[in-house]
Image 1: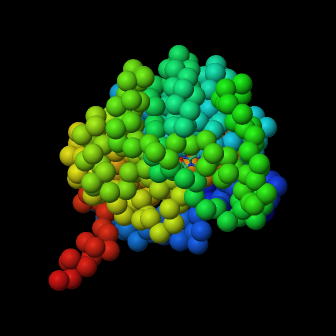
Image 2: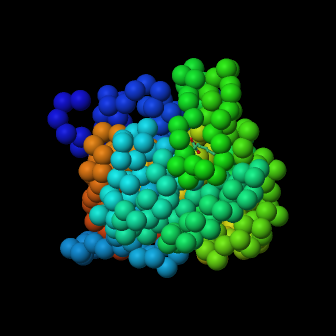
Image 3: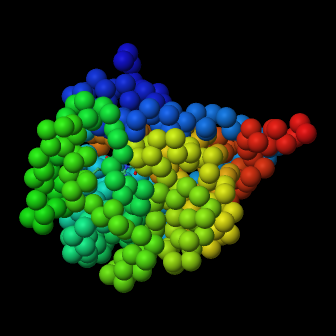
Amino acid sequence: MAGEPVNVNEFEELAKEALPKMNYDYFSGGAEDEYTLKENVEAFKRISIQPRILVDVSKINMSTTILGYKTSSPIMIAPTGLHKLAHPAGEIATARAAAASDTIMALSFASSCTLEEVASSCNAVRFFQLYVYKRRDVSELIVQRAERNGFKAIIVTVDAPRFGRREADIKNKMIIPPMANLKGVISHEVVSDKGSELQAYVSATKDASLSWKDIAWLKSITNLPVLIKGVLTSEDALKAVEVGVSGIVVSNHGARQLDYSPATITVLEEVVSAVQGKIPVLVDGGVRRGTDVFKALARGAQAVMIGRPVVYGLSAKGENGVKTVINMLKDELELTMALAGCCTVKDITRQHVRTEHDRHRCRI
Ligand SMILES: Cc1cc2nc3c(=O)[nH]c(=O)nc-3n(C[C@H](O)[C@H](O)[C@H](O)COP(=O)(O)O)c2cc1C
Ligand SMILES: CCCCCCC(=O)C(=O)O
């Protein structure tokens, strides 16, 4: 690519140039036809922004609080695994970038650096994402380590009882890179001559029997707030409130699990209405512009999380790349707020956006 990137999308091209094919395909790929992968991004484009004029926007304040933690903007780093496939400094670089931009980071269970290394590398507010293994003692031990090391919340990912069928990984015979948190705890050894070794490993280790009753177990082993990641329906949002979680992440795992599941921005509002403000609702999937962040907030999200853009920034330029990605999105959000007549995130309302459904209703 000629010149420096001017938006987050351009980092993908740089990442592709920088990485071996297997690594780039792992980061960028989605499940099967990748229909949902495209939809996550396209669905944002179908929402228009309704600006209000003649508002004094000489001062814009994007700061907000998430679970009581103050942060510079409603943009968080989503948990993504295996950052050393992107850059040798791995999650330490990502965490330092998060700290430098006063952004909350969710560290993946499948990180390439240990949670202890990440905790001691920076003072970012950090949440920890959990996968529940058949060996519950493994998950329990890791939750205890996260708590001891100052992580502020546990985000349990529930959309992956089995691993999605990522065809690029199958073709590349994706390896199982070291997952640092599991070193000395459980073996990585899985033999598969069929395709993605990572997929075979996940099938062998993850607990596909995980169900609603297990949330009580998870709450019983930690004092940290527990959030559920992977909610896509109002029914499940209601259950999440019922079982007493502290927050919901509307997510389809970046379209890497169930293809043809809905684009997250299209179901956000039904989840928000079901929850009735009882717990915070976050959303991820396809956020590539400050305007996307604005649209998600207008539809009721408290914050968004970004996955691939962070990994692309890391692949292209390490810690500085992640910082640039976050700052680009923050700058775009700030400009969007000014141009739409919103001085604070609380000023962003449902009236500031129009969906296809709204437009259709106006016509009849
Ligand atoms: C390369 C990659 C690795 C991921 N690893 C995890 C993970 O370890 N745990 C998890 O809960 N979600 C994981 N996700 C899903 C993200 O947390 C997030 O839901 C998704 O990336 C958001 O979509 P976006 O990439 O379009 O921003 C991963 C996503 C990607 C792209
Ligand atoms: C239990 C290890 C799973 C690692 C995969 C990380 C992930 O969720 C992904 O989407 O990739």
